[in-house]
Image 1 (cartoon, rainbow, N blue to C red):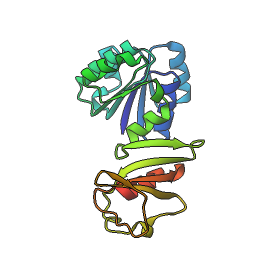
Image 2: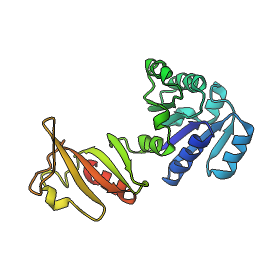
Image 3: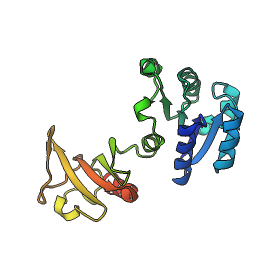
Image 4: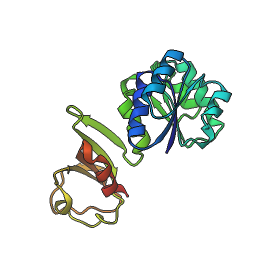
Length: 216
């Protein structure tokens, strides 16, 4: 996956590192020369010193090839303008960081896919929003050692199996199942049907494996 990030501050830089470590291709756009220089040293990625609200700069990043664009600066106006410009390139997913919650509606009105308010600007959350589209929601527990993932069962390998046949393991445990609009505590003899919604407590190191088990 190819991701273009505008903003080389703490959030943008950390997000870029997380995506690169996951094997994704990243280009970072930063207007501040000092931040740009720091990013160029730290990242194994293309770093463009320029203004992401400028079409020429966006095209230097090969924006038309991007799968995701993230406007991660602390300036709402710049983030909004860049997202509007990027929409012309038909990017599959556009995500914007919004510092002032009063501006959220403006972003949504122009059709921005993801609007991340200050409470959710942690780079780790942004990374999960980009890389785990099959996970409906996510809660980080403790010191980041485990997560609760809400997922829909789609994998033929587990459809029709009893909860007790696949849970618990050393890496995860099914903690709840949603059936007919109500939540149930799973019993060993409960059957996992196609489309069943489950909440799973997962160790951080096993998130990719477990997500694939339930949703692939």
